[in-house]
Image (tube, rainbow, N blue to C red; front, side, top):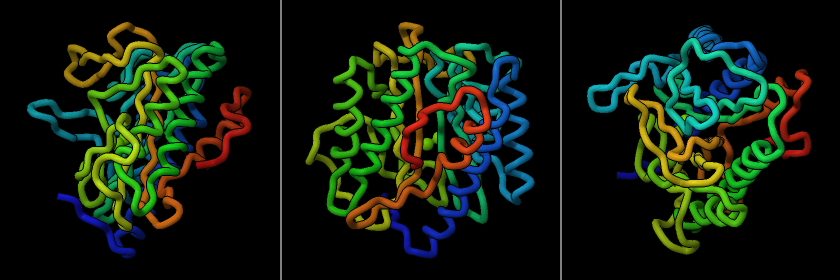
Length: 273
Ligand code: MG
Ligand code: MG
């Protein structure tokens, strides 16, 4: 069942979304060769709790599995749902950081793939294309468009460049629950699927693999990896469907401000989402 949000609810979601953006900004200041993913997790958890919110992923259950951390940190061939731990990030790695918060009854959810030190041009192109595909998809989240328009925007750009669009995992509605209807696939046919209505709030989150779209789940029960062990990127925004132009509730502004002070600024010319 789809729950369209009124302006008061969107106000609540805007606050949660902003906190996720600021948390990822705090994480961004620490992403560098030599840092462990559990250190990133500690930074995020303290930041969220210091702002009167709770980490949304910690304790999240799927079947009998309970997610143990604040962030999902997915390195290189890990697509999503990586568990923070003693893994030390190295120069040339990429790490996808997904963060969820619960603030005053409303969830926020956003993700960003960081370059660690300097990465290869081909990996940089994967990140840039995934990022661009998210922005194109966000541009489709307007009243009267269809879910297929969002998926098609991601799929067309990424497949045209030879990348694999993950189909086993999708975006979602969000509100007083972390995952609500509808599912928001990163593939589809323009003009098909459910019509988007004003007040629909969704997470659009392309997960794009360097080559094969196929994935498998690791023995830890959570970590999703590419089947060919090549890298994968993930960016996620929460958007409210509006007439004419979507309202992007999350922001990468804090992340990109943090990256500005580091020697390896990403996406120098990218518009802030
Ligand atoms: Mg997420
Ligand atoms: Mg999500």
